[in-house]
Image 1: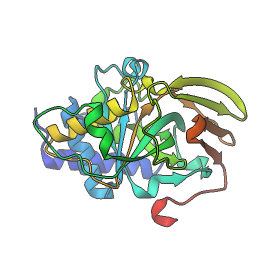
Image 2 (image 1 turned 135 degrees about the horizontal axis):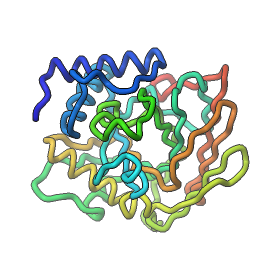
Image 3 (image 1 turned 180 degrees about the vertical axis):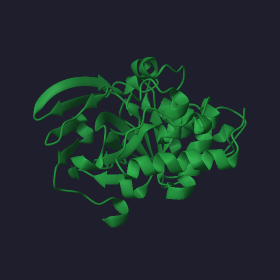
Image 4 (image 1 turned 120 degrees about the horizontal axis):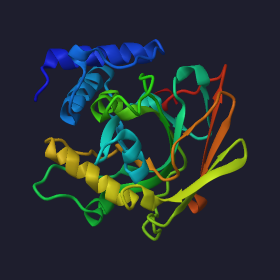
Length: 272
């Protein structure tokens, strides 16, 4: 079932207001609540039209465990805004986020477009479009009191649970790396808490990028040169308390650090 533009716009407005006011809700009002993923994307599109989010995409639920938690059989996407992309080391105000969920992810900066086409994209199809691999920490955010139980359609509507993205240094000469086996270690306050590999993201970061390119093509959209795509967690999901420091170690790709401070902030790329 389709969702009328006016309903999608109202749902987007409610979500954006809740985010701006840092106000949690149990769920969207029933009259504006998406009941299927496609309706969730209608709301997300309306939100992006308001905010101008065009810097790229995040991919959510690329790990089997994440899909189990959200109760979905496939990944989903959210939009990136330039003002919510930060460079490592980043120090962000804890009060700016309601959830402060942390995920270690492989991100890509695209050097060429991946346009709509009839055939599905594969990993070998999207690899030539990748200008650089970038280690990243995604900050997961949600207006919902229990975002694991509101349903995938509402999570998609709430921009796929995306809050912000912290990027490390870019590596342009990455093609000799096995990203599927590449290890990532997450430390909080200097103590290693978990580790994983790129294979957690749909079998590999390039496979996740291929999924997104195919999904956008199905919607008549494309991935554009210059956009950033972050491909999903490789080391689980963790909630971080104010004052804690997070470090994601991607080996030869470098480290990404993030601190949540009570009285310090950091501008996004459009403010750098």
